Image 1 (tube, rainbow, N blue to C red):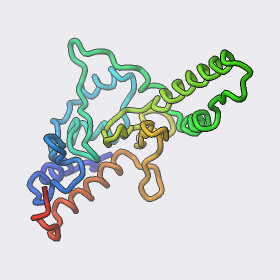
Image 2: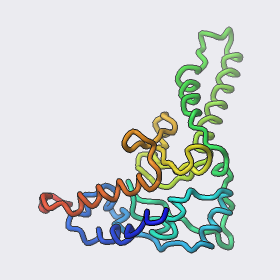
Image 3: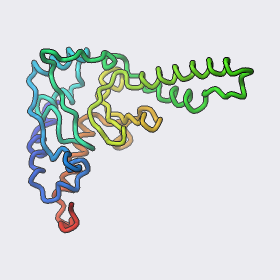
Image 4: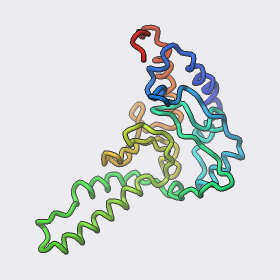
Length: 224
């Protein structure tokens, strides 16, 4: 990972002075937005504290980002969630993050929700239908919760969509869309037809943000 994040913090913070930074999605939203600000980086010990709390070792690209760029702030969509080491009184983290990420569950979830819902006409009485429906509903909830096992929620896309970083299994280190809010499960984010790693996802956003924020063809009079 040597050199992956060299100069990135400086590039991000420089965008605060760009003439059209407000045109970048998520940078300026009502009274909030990330405004191209970054939290201070973490120390190695602080990262270890985060990992101990989550029960999993963070993927190298993301881990190095926390050490060299920032512990949250400016990033894709509405920015990266803050990463705060555990301190006195911090509530224990759930352990689902350390479970195995199983992308195949999205297909199973879709099949169950959209094709396996019990229909009243298939049951002889209300009691049998109610029991079948309750069993179906319990399984749907179980599958939906399991979709994000082995992931860490890192960014808010708005409208109940989130970006997830996979931290276990074969896809460890890649980023996925959590679009359960519209019943679509968890789907890979792709760049050049490949599932994007954290670095590719973040740097793609930064390149695009720089183009927009420094674009000399933008009509300043049309900006908010």
